[in-house]
Each structure stands twice: as structure tokens, then as C-alpha cells.
Length: 118
Image 1: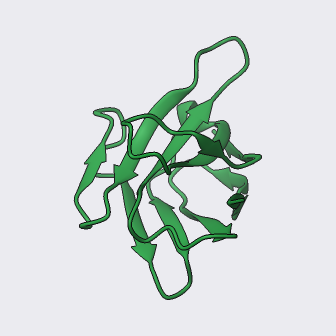
Image 2: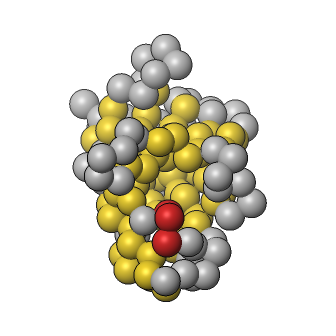
């Protein structure tokens, strides 16, 4: 059974940076699409970035140029580098894996809180 554990969230001032990590255990995730999502109270979960097994990446328009997703297969870990943080980036950030290769994320982490002060 795969488990995903996010870390790296925290309180940061606007304009600052954070690097979120998603460590996978129970199975190697290098051959699966991995994604980062975020959610704020009262809003639907939003996809912000994803990375395929080949390393191909995609981003939500709202984060292009500021967020970078990457993976270290040797560490079985996926990262989300967040630069030029804005107050509207405040959310719980979740990591997810598409283990069935069905185009849907079926395993989720518990989330890490990112709070950006203005």
C-alpha cells in the first residue's frame, strides 16, 4: 500500500519561497504520474501541477512561472518549488499519485498547510 507524506509547508511572507516535499513509501512511484493540488476552506480542490513518468510537467495558469514540480526517483520523492508567494497561494497543499494510470489520482497524502502573509 502506497503512502504519501507531504512536508515543507509553513508561514511565509509574500514574495518568499517554499519547497514542498512528497515522500512516497510502499511502492516506487517513478513510473506514475504525480500531482500537487491545493484547497482552501469553502473551495474545491484545485490542481496546480503534475509530472508524468517521463518527466513531462503541467501547471495551472495561475501558478505558471512561479511553481516548479520535480521528482527525485532515487528518493521516491516529488517536490513543488513555490516562488514569489502570494497571499492567494494560502491553502492546504496535497500530493497525489495516479497508480492505476487511469487519468485520475487515487492515492492522496494528508496535506501540508501553506500560509502567506501580506
